[in-house]
Amino acid sequence: MQPTRHIVIVGGGLVGAVVALALQQRGFRISLVDRARPTPGPQGLGIDIRNVALSHGSRQLIESVVDWPGQAGVFKAMHVWEQWGVNSLHFAARDLNLESLGWISEVAPLLTALWQKIDATPDIETVFGEIGSVQHGVDSVSLGLAQRSIEADLLIASDGARSGVRNLLQVPTQTWPTGQVALTTVVATEQSHQDTAWQRFLLDGPLAFLPSKHKHQCSVVWSQSEQSLQANLAASDAEFCQRISQALEYRLGAVTEVATRQSFPLQQQLAQTAQPRPRVLLIGDALRVVHPLAGLGVNLGFEDARAVLAAVDAMAGQLDPAGFAKFARQRLLKSQLMLRLLSGLQVLYGQPDPLTSWVRNIGVGRVNKMGWLKRQLMLEALGGRELLKESATAADGNLSDAEGRLI
Image (cartoon, rainbow, N blue to C red; front, side, top):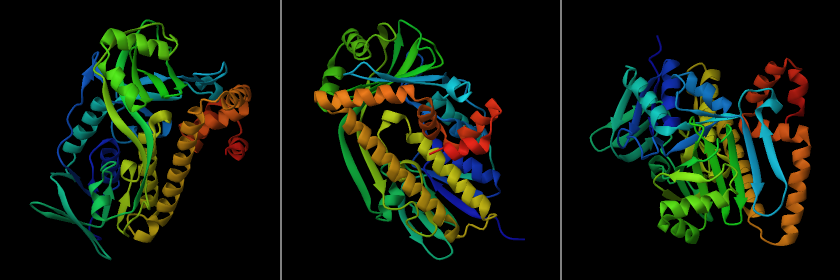
């Protein structure tokens, strides 16, 4: 009988924890390594300030390993408009014959559920400590920590934007500053969020209100200049509520309460490859970091995880490094495309001159009237072919015809 293959995963965040459980389900022995056990983040207005947008594909992957979190709020529509201009884009789940476009989930409850499952799974060993070295050979890879080393058949690095594995292997990584920082918080609104994700492109940066399970509470991600950030952090709660209400044009009435305001720098980055060594893979933020304006970050990480699982399934458990070559090519290409798209959107909506604004506004108006184009944009952004299958099944339509029209 062939010995059980051993996989070491570095990084126990959402993506790393899910891929660890999914690979254990496939019969692998797993070592999950992190600096420390995850702890709950800051709370505001009774919910976690850290929230993530999850696509249909991400939900399917999560539900394959743990129960879906009850704290996740659904969004059935997206409404996008800009500071200058009268036209807007409105995307609705009903246009895809679906009940929802996605979900906004608090990070802490989901991460807690994942780690409870990890702790209860005998074939997953958890190891805490700093990584000191990564040694790679033809048949194995070895991870060195202060008190021990771990030898495995495959190493998957899911340890974030400052990935220790990527840095130890000296993987060339390109960084693009965005000139913005992000302010995050939770707010209470006078009117219901209507199960809608609201995003307004301001000249200073995009502002997003993401619906929570509670109809009058939204998570906020506000990308802005450093100067604006300092003013918004220094403002009293009442002043900030007025500022952000105006920034959203009172679409949800007045903002009545605000939780603790936090900030983090925004930059985009991309590693040179998703497979820096034959038996080492990079996924999630260890591979690429994107601007949060489209809410794609963790979903791209879950896409990476699904691609790893697909490659492993195709190899029937052999973990042949050559079998991950397609994974590496596809994930690098997808990352490059997303980075270019998000950079282009940031530049496009940051142009203040009237001519650019006029042309942009005409284009937005035309796209909003072109149902087929809006449909394809939604499919590609919210789950691609898997969401297409779900949509086509719900409509009892012709799947092959629909797939032929997908960009």
